[in-house]
Length: 148
Image (cartoon, rainbow, N blue to C red):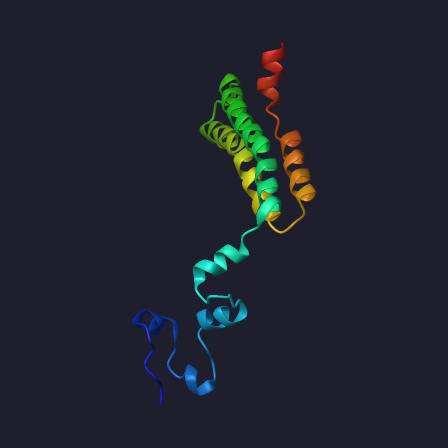
């Protein structure tokens, strides 16, 4: 016979007949896969976080890039306001505005993708992707208008 779950919320994670087939709920499998010293989930989060100097160095190395990407997004926001589309039809004007929107949000999207994508990669790989993004996403219309 099926036994009653310890917690009423755990009942939502089970299918009828799982016990007869020898299946355990997914949350039980995850608890067994990552055992911790005290057994509580809070200590598991502490164990999974980067420890000591390496984690601090990774965070501090990203701060200048965060500021650079913020400046790039602001530069594109100013730059796209200075350029008119010249489109006379509504579809062309709409597509132009769509492109302006993506030009502005490209920098924050690249930053987030680089951080998430290089979560387990070495620090130099993360810095390389962030540096490549800065080089690719420079707001050329704004920079050329300022220097001219």
